[in-house]
Image 1: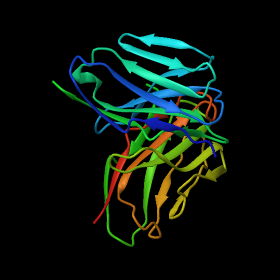
Image 2: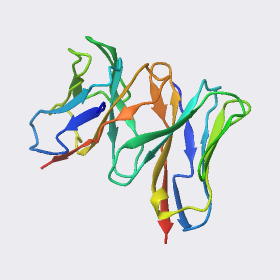
Image 3: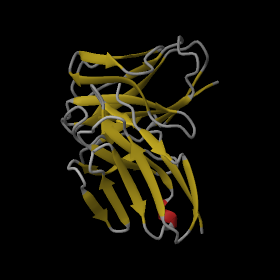
Length: 109
Length: 113
């Protein structure tokens, strides 16, 4: 079935530093979604990318979909303590939504 | 307010007992899902349903059962056959399977004592 690799698994940064997580697939994706899960919380939808090469921004967050639609990235500029959590990518599998393993972001204030 | 509700938030179970986790949504979504999350781990799919009275096994269905008698409800039963049931269980729904954003419930943290 559809699998997606997400790296890194963990990332610790100083507040104010940038952060990037990547999702990679061996097959072409129809779309990709990104979710954020705060510690002790539940995943919350952030964005969906559909078009090849698409770039979307939400304040300090920049989402990119690769030209070949096989990879995607989430970049956070100048992290803040509110960015702490686990970021998941989700892709469409044969019959349902498949999630990456997630990247857990911790921040040193 | 529209949303997806899981109950209870915390659940304790004795070994050998079955327990049912509730999931209700009023978003009029067709698709519903159950995921299991272990500490520091990703989301593993247990069961999903696209339509009333129909559901399919996910990657880790052994020891679990579900029903979908109503569009709004998708309860998950953790049976005594599940060898390691202590985990965080998340229910989700979406308008169409896999194509639209998924909305998650608050989760149920199950502990076997």
